[in-house]
Length: 608
Image (tube, rainbow, N blue to C red; front, side, top):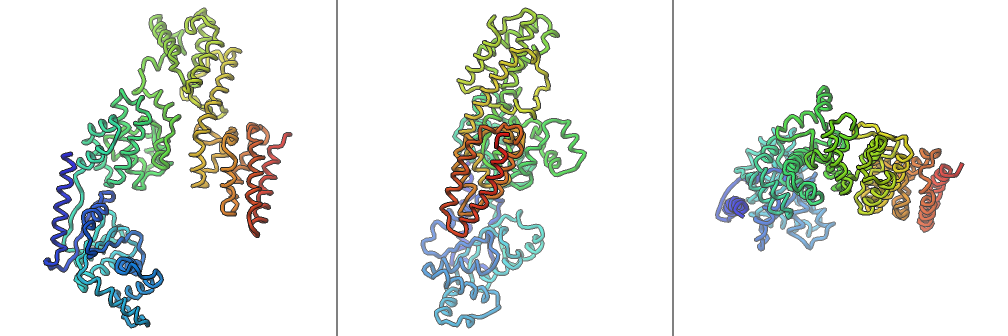
């Protein structure tokens, strides 16, 4: 706990000075600035160290975050000084008081005697008070105006004023005016920026996973370097990134348990990408499109862009290998959702997380006729062991092994399947890994748009045995996919309910890109969920209905979605029931729009 105590001691020094400044016996004619980067805990510090002993009520806290007019600030004063005053009254009086402060109008603008009394009472109650103005850099009032307003309380009301801000985040267009006005208003500046190493240790102590804590502890020096290279210091963002890192470690600890190198690379990648994303410098799409090899990066460098600039400023991060896919990292930062299946598939093939020789056995045997006898026997024995231990889980690899087995059998080598019939052996193998929930639900592999990750053709793919096994594997993978979708559809519904841009996934093709065009799965989702997305508060979601229509229009001739046809009928019935309970004129409008869309949808799913 030594580092935590150091931070507490530093904070106590600030508290002691501020208490001296706030003291009635201290006469000053200037404000104090408490400066620190976003996420450094300034607001927490003020509320827990400065305001917590405010029993006398002589310290007022005013937030400037999003404030666009002086009257909004005055409203906050009235709320704290006159908690029993009606909201309507203090809004009117607040405007008048704001005018008074600005020198535009006097208290005689208030016609009612009670209003005049309240105005006079406001200034009497503010005199000699301690006022804390938080989030200066987030205020929408021009910096000169707000500092002039604050200076009024220092010079004319003899208030002790503490301004809380992140100077580094004051808008660049106003920075010159800020420093000119600061000189006249602020007498001293206190920095609340504890050493990075202490902050990282403090954050690390809050983690529960021992493996994640160990990796962070061992890499503090390089993490400080990454943060320095970013040029952006936000403790809140760093803490959030640590939390995401720990979640990933917890979800995939079995893969990372024996690879400190992989975890370190992942930590560095998450830290750099997370800082840039949370600072608004890397979007979801830009993270997903980060280069994974030097060739792509060289091509991208020919076109100067901000992504290249970001990559070049970090000297510690290995950009071509973040350990988990960039698309998965983007989704974690954007939505918090972890793509378990995609990440597992990636980790199973990562050279830092597998025994390299074993992971290459099937690849070596793909060209077995080019191996020496000793290399052939070593690879054959290794692949046989993997099959016996049910270690091959990816559909594409399984089919490559089926082709290899058929090729070897044609040359009188049957030891790979222990002399068992190849079709029987692999059907049993597929059933077993499916039963154990090990088979990866990579349904994209069986689509026409799939591109092999290995760029290898399938040996003996024209043989009947191969076709039978492939069909059995396809059914098993599809069942696994459906099973995972039943558990994962809330994520899809969540995304669609928050962004209509997600609707395109219903009709665009490319399962490996997260799209479902031409692939039946809606029948796994209770239609009532979709019905309530289509009609919300008696408003029809035309964009969603158009996307559903487009889904079946594109599938009109191929009929790949026939399994969903009964689901469509249920969806129609439920939405009509919801519309039927609406009141006019919404009821008629809803029924007309539903009829328009469902007539078109049904015309596309009718049997030709």
